[in-house]
Amino acid sequence: MEWTVEIARRAAKQVGNLPIKAREALVDLIRDMESNGPIRGDWPNFSALSGNRYHCHLKKGHPTYVAIWEVADKEIKLIEVVYAGTHEKAPY
Image (cartoon, rainbow, N blue to C red; front, side):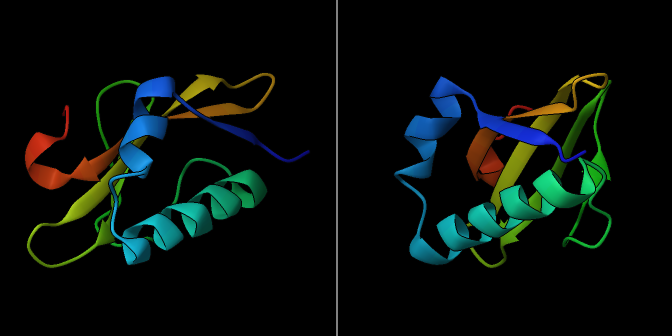
């Protein structure tokens, strides 16, 4: 069974401000999580944050763009992207 990935309202607004390469990387990340789950060790700078939250880099350079997601429900396999934007403003 595949995972369902949703984008939080706040993160959806942030996606519109991402550069094209970062936006494309986020789409690839979402597709990867739908197929393989939330633990994406094959993505750049992937790490687990507190609880069921994770993050990785979407685009290197200055500024660096990151995505943060959390496992909302393990039983129904639901992931929610809660942030997509610059590393400096990320809510770690």
